[in-house]
Length: 352
Length: 132
Image (cartoon, rainbow over all chains, first blue to last red; front, side, top):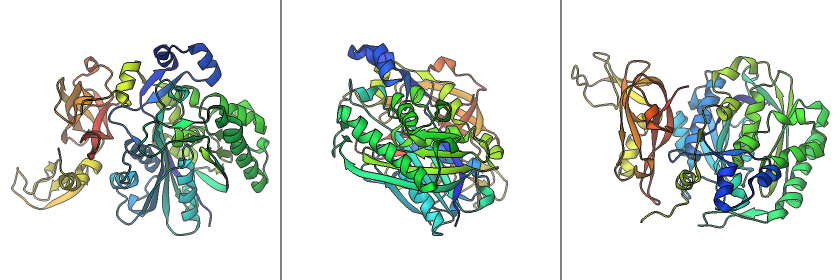
């Protein structure tokens, strides 16, 4: 059975903090961070935004583009995140209740560092392909945290992307051509139970983790599908900062033009489980029918999911039924100072 | 704080903006009631409210009650939705309350409304955000 995306949507919070605002608090050299990480600013969730609220809004946008799907027909909904609001109590039940997809639905929350979003997409499309459900939703969303003063604090951001998969070809905005996953046990980044902030292996997160895993996954995908970089109109890679996705893309043989549309991290930061999926929504916002798109995620621990999509004719008709991704990033931002950021991110110890 | 049972009962209206339309006189009730205040009817049809509207009036709460203190200053508005139904909601994403005006177009977005400290339930619903 053929499977495709029938609706997609993104949600990006409006608040931003500039790299210089964080650097000045910690006495860091902003220009060298800006150059080294290729980051300018990042999104910050409000006190009233979390993985659940962003997932609901992204999925409502996906339903608007799907056009006419009864949410009750959705047979599975998965959210990949490392910042589920509850340690015990699923995020997916709240999202499914809000979009009207309960009660005949299978729900699970996934976690695999920054890869959990594509993991939910991977399982959702596989269930549709197997004929188990008519429609399945895969969501990647995070309100990720970096420890104060840590390099991660300059990148850890918030956002969500949602994809509805189905098998009715006339609804496809992009067909799933093929998938591939590449996973090993590589301890580059972790957070233990009850710990507020993650820890990481500094430079070990680079070559042995991100670059080895991402290149192996993308190469494996292209080999399996019999494709080469030149065959793709766009490629999106996981974006832990501004530098890594461009570097891994060019290492694999992609041009900057192929990478530019999905490269959001210099202005968005790293939205973890939402990162490469939100980049993919920005690509769908401008892609042409027939375009081949490579989506390759990365999650510490470590693994990578790759997808090849072929964009369908219907994309032209539906992309403006919901807010596009790039305007959400570039317009109507609310800039905040570090004090407000510390309050919103729960970095201030309150009276009990 | 709202009990788990009460919050659960209110999910249809809070999560999906479901309202009750009186079968007798057509009045739309949000939140739904067991008896229509206009015609005393007790039969209702469930309808979903639109998410677009405009600010009829608003106030800014500078000293919010427990459960809302982290969201100070907290703008609260009476919003008239596209179908004429009026709802009382918080306004989110306000950089400066001085930017709020009567008549402003708004859109309802799914947000956290309040939460029971660090360990209790999180209560979700809709807030108005300025439509641009």
